[in-house]
Length: 180
Image (tube, rainbow, N blue to C red):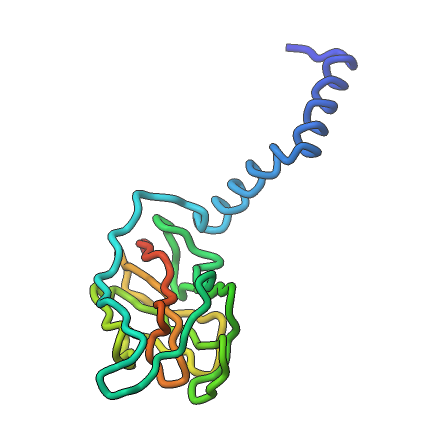
């Protein structure tokens, strides 16, 4: 097939219009994601974690830190269904509130916890610190973790200065990733 200068010009004009209208941007993002390990992959939603109902005051009398209704925590670089390699880089996203280290009591803030293969969370108790509940009490907003090859669920939760989830709980979507 041969292209005339007019055909080539029409093709360039169409491409320019797609870029200007934003339509071509999505293809570039998908290609970029595929090039970087399928980070933008999507899959059927992962079943949510089982979480107890949050109460504003614990039986001990401790008043839980109130989270703004619009507060959201999310994975900034991973999507449900992504296939990744070790070390797995996890970037935490947070909107509607700020980050403060553990032990620092400041309204409208908390710190991140990464839940790995966790099935249930007690919203009215301090989060445990172990391989499944990773604490980022220095105020970190990203990490790299080594995970065994296979399928894993990840979820983010924000907690107060004492590692107790806010009221209401600020928790991300639970995603499933595959580690090669």
